[in-house]
Image (cartoon, rainbow, N blue to C red; front, side, top):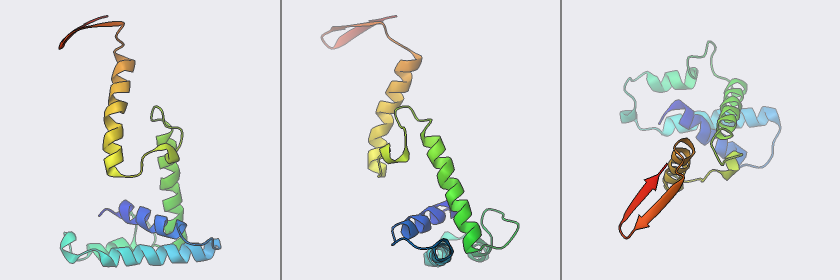
Length: 136
């Protein structure tokens, strides 16, 4: 599990809770972030100090983690994801993206086909039984 995955999981948990003031939200987020890191099995860490480092500093931060700094980074990454999703053809917002990996796999092929057709348009297509001929 990567640090950003922990960040997203903690953010989803906090967003799923009842509305709360910013200060409390930041404290709850920090506690959830630390709890998720604690739940990761020791065998998943290549270095024994990595768990401590993840709790202490996020993504090479210059200062130690606080609820405020982690929540700000989470919101920044979420904003970047929203902006990125707007660039995907046919997607105007994150809510239009499928939620599960199975659904993402099903979305991939039509998206690739659409991008291919956009780049390589076919003007006509004639089918002859199992064979077909395309002309450009």
